[in-house]
Image (cartoon, rainbow, N blue to C red; front, side, top):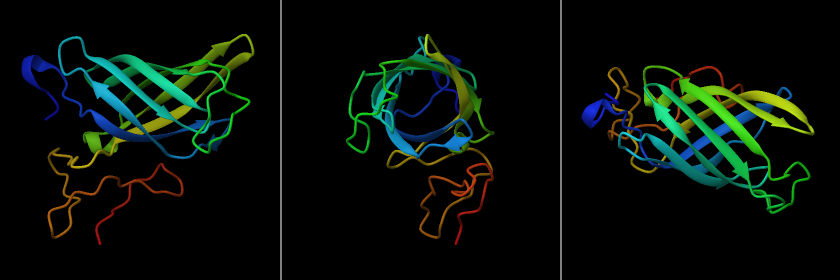
Amino acid sequence: PLLGQGGVVDLPSGVWRGYYTHMGRRHNVCEFNLEFSGDTSQKIVGDGVDDVGRYRMEGVYGGRRISFTKTYEARSLNVSGVRSYGNQGHKVEYRGEMAGDSLGEGFRGTWTIHSPLGNYEGSFHLWPCMEGFADTAPGNNEQDEGGRTFEESECVVCYDRPISTRL
């Protein structure tokens, strides 16, 4: 269901959501823009602002995997309008794969930072949330009577357990 012309994975460009963990702490869900080339180059570009600051993303995707680098703009304002001490204009490497058979389950993986100040790592989860996104994977029936598809079906307390969002 995700294969487009020429066997290239067809991922939706637009607004995505995600969170990451660092030192056992989950950081707030944030929204960001991701654009997938949709051709054989299978490139990813994107941008956003999170609790660290403003960033750009560049990478590649293929099959069920994604890989990208998030580069922070040094000393930029974060999502709360504050300059984060942790924003040194650093780069974060992300590697992940689809969390299940449905794109609505998103991608999960690990992130790493290698810098003179130290090495850090954690996990992440991201998923599409753009207006009009409907997960068309077989067996996905998370719709209400009006035929609207729910964007997420993940527990907002632990973020690890799938839940039914059907009312």
